[in-house]
Image (tube, rainbow, N blue to C red; front, side, top):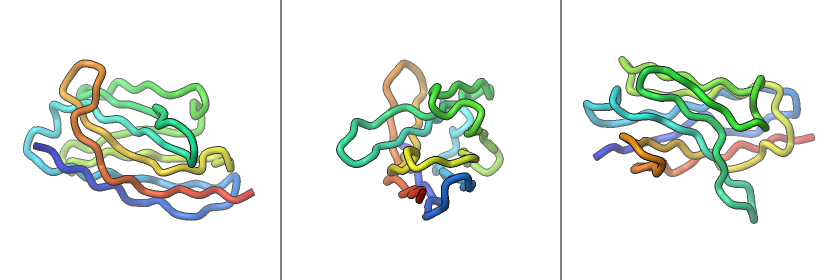
Length: 117
């Protein structure tokens, strides 16, 4: 069992930056691939970024060059550094964890990010 707790959301002006954190419980964090997703009002949850247990990363086209995902296995934490934020980045951001396959096994409760124009 893995429990995930996101933090770091808030209100920021367009062009600003935020860093989200996702702290994971459990002793096997190193084995999990981690991902960030977001859901805007009235929209489906969408993929933002992911990082494998070995550190390989991938991003949605909409955030490439602006967002960076990283992990600190010693702290059981994954981060999402968000720069050059746009109003369309406004959403609830969720982190997820999976051991393998395409589906995520565990989810956090989400953290709100609001970007004002």
